[in-house]
Picture 1 (cartoon, rainbow, N blue to C red):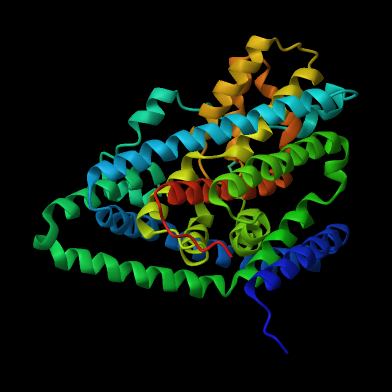
Picture 2 (cartoon, protein in one colour):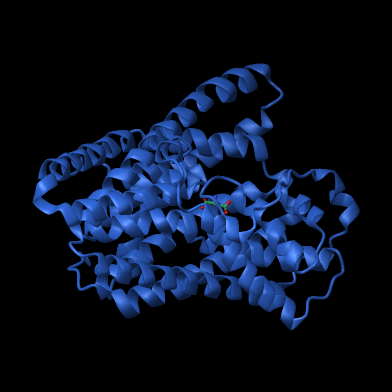
Length: 412
Ligand code: ASP
């Protein structure tokens, strides 16, 4: 018998995880199920997997970006790639939010909902940081604390400086360069080892999520969920497919097939940050993107490129406005496009961060921040899907940058 690929195994885990989760949801009153199956076995398998991947994020990003930027050979190339990457990330995010606003206006998901029914959902909002602080914060005052806190942008800044230093000193620090090169091979092998656990880990995470949500929680907000999912799908099918076919000249089916392990990890962890090791490995090994490009674009994308999050925020704004009976003007929509693009840059690649940043967008157009409470109950379902889109967007942009830099990509 042919050996099953990792992708197939993960796919089976996803489906069986959802079924098992829904089943456990209906059996939750039995203490054995709650305490042992969910509270012990699923928790153990899911948490060990997430922690094992997360364990690799900081060393991987630091090492591979240092290697990448020191391999670039010249600082101007780094600047050019940097500007191109940023422009692409912002461009796709603005398209994403526009699709979300258009679709949400056509479907009007908030119609027929009454606020009182939802009042008990409860919310935990904290104020997002002003944008100037987001910018200042890119430079770490202490790189060790940046690593200890897993602050991706700060780690990126420090790694770029280290790489630039290695490039300038050249042969004088050849041993340091070798050390980083070998450490890079080592950490990629560690990613492979951890990913062997992915089928089990994905199963446990998905089953836990569905065991706590069930389907009843989703019903009243089904229209909001479906509109958001549809906008995510349209963005993937039109924007990403268009870019893949038009610029990269890659068959989208090939892309999805090869990229699926990263999508499934994004889906089950709801964290772009935790998915970095898998995303990075996939674009390098499966698509042949150079280390120097991908080790810059992927961690950067995981912290600032959130097309899926922007889509959720767009639909949520229209939904909340309609539920509260507020009419949004054209100017409001433009404000939403601008702030949601900025908010998605400031959103951390961790579960639930996008819903917190939504408060910034709501505040900009004068909508009540309490509106977030309406969507909190179902946010996890959307988070899983939007994170998968966030991560796919990083990969698509990376392929475009690599292509336009003249790299030989693996297209089949
Ligand atoms: N969970 C998302 C991510 O990591 C961020 C969000 O909450 O929108 O990409």
